[in-house]
Length: 448
Image (tube, rainbow, N blue to C red; front, side, top):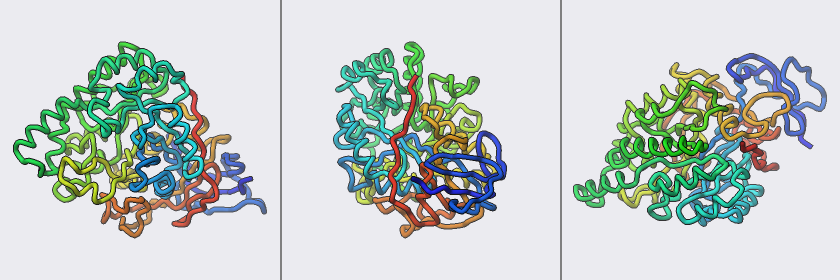
């Protein structure tokens, strides 16, 4: 049985407002919110001057377990997540093996039950090879199906490149279909042109030109048209361009949307001007693009065309990143610092705390129909993070928790710090100290 924890006098940020109150946690749940007297069996945490958020829910990570665990694994990366205030995540299928069967999916859940400090869920992978198997399944049992990352295995795995496969899936799938939206034929033509100019030594700053705005827009537009035709539930992963934001609507509540999207924090934080300094360290697919795109993404986040914030946390070793363009792996670790990045935007007056909580806590729970998570409500799971908005610190190799041991944010000074993280009522992270006696839970969800 969990010890009862009483968080006193923190400023709760929840459901569009901020207010000072106490929160009592016991048996994994939020039991009471209000003015609460402490009792002898309560562990009391003084939240005076600090802000209490629901635990962050990261809807897109690559924690590398199984098969790629030299980069990261469900223990190391969930530990980094917890230190960043992330209490739940959904992991992508591009592990080894790719998660293309129910058996491999169940094995991944089994691994997580013994390794993950945060709550977890997993996408089933879908591509041209297993599409016929997937549409025969009861897909309502999955939190979602996705092709993300599967293009690393072989060309032709992106649904956005295969209208026939996409149409078949949209016509038959009962779960969320989350896709990586780039048109490979456009990317490949650009790659060829740059290869002819530079050979293998293509500069990193060419990446957003090769993986262009046009390639993203054309793929997203076509996917949305097909999804509308079949009334499918489509989620476009990691949006990167201003022009794509105009394809999404903000005139109905999230619960009623059939077509949704997200922005990953690095596409809000970096722009193409950062390639000069950081090079391949910020090579992501889809690419970090222009300052105009960055501003357009933030605007769409604020006006609700973009529904959630994710990290697309994708660790690689430094050796894998620092190779020439075509060999350098795409992706980077972000999950330990995503909330700090967003709070930095708050400090700059670009976004409110309430909107950050909406996009990082409430909306992921709504979008994926999670049961009793994402809000500070009585009876909900006690997933919480206590934040000090006036605590300066700098990212260094010494305070990184990623297994890969590096971050594109090294040297960045943040003005805010995550002080405590609670998962299912357990104080798992406390000012740099971890309690690893409890693992996270499989996220319950209801698919419509």
